[in-house]
Image 1 (cartoon, rainbow, N blue to C red):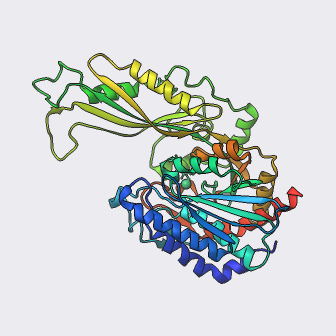
Image 2 (image 1 turned 90 degrees about the vertical axis):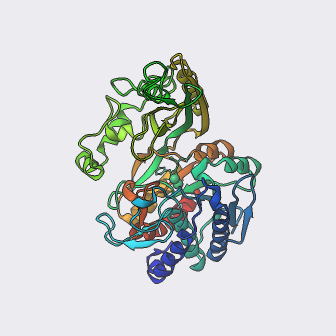
Image 3 (image 1 turned 120 degrees about the horizontal axis):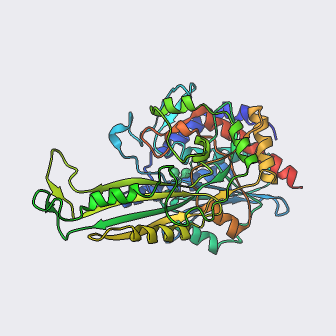
Length: 462
Ligand code: BES
Ligand code: MN
Ligand code: MN
């Protein structure tokens, strides 16, 4: 495989322009007001895949948003790479914290991206990273170097739990048959410290509701005499961690696979500066489970975090009131071998159990998924390693990530293949936050590295 560098140099402006166009469509899967835009994005991906050289591309209808499936089969005897990505994005709020409109992409330089970064919702997660694969395919087909078969499966519901993708995968095992799954929807340590993601955390996401009196009450007339749902909820949530920041739900850690000392000491070798970390977040100290380092806390350890909490009066000024109800949304990040459904039930039982008399508690599970860890001796991992060595001039570091892509564990179960996570974003790219961005250098480096993966994977499979 020849280097893609000259081709990228020649077509760089168009590669950027095409991505900017895609980023202008607000494909927010969580908000039904954007339904037409989500569907419009699926059509745009279909066109892009056709232009990049897929022989067939279909928009596959599902009970939810469509899945774009494309393929180019050059020889059934050769290996098949299945590329997965998502074209939906997170809601952009809070809007007033964006320095430019989220769906009006602009290019600006930053300290970490001196060559410029594209600022827009979805720039990194995942439109930009998904589109690297489309352009990598274009390079391989136009220069007649595609070494194997390729399939693309791009979904529109990742940010809301991938319900339709599970449905689709179960019904299309044959169509999706492959030798390796390739995903760019994670990150790497730094532009000069390439890494390959070898693990993802699982997830259990729940919503709780605490109900006290049957109506909002005057906080003077009733205060002190009845349970205040907001007070009670705060106390219940606070009790979910002990003084060492261990989670107190009985049985929560029972299935946790402890990392070996060998793995922990390897992890500790990865370059990391706690001072820079604190400075970037403007915090005077880190915080977390006693006995574990920051990088362990955010990757190999399970967590419980409130993602939102509300109840009572939150408008301007003061209103004296005891609310009838209080709510919270809670995520638990899980590690191998925790079962997300079991954890959801443990949470529900425990939370109902600790509710004091005077309130009623309901727990509503949202979505979830299993954690994933991939071995570093598979053909896929070794091919990725060689690809990075070629384009970065350095051996990438294997790194477990704290984020979740729940569908990856399901791929392994339903399609029986390993997933390779070649992410080119940085943790500081602000995915899910205001001012999300993706470095232009990273975008182009991804397009350069992906074809090398195809080359080595095909070579090493024979
Ligand atoms: N691409 C992210 C996951 C990710 C980002 C993993 C960076 C590792 C490094 C994905 O789009 C995402 O946001 N996943 C959700 C879970 C999903 C069920 C909503 C998450 O991790 O919160
Ligand atoms: Mn993503
Ligand atoms: Mn995301």
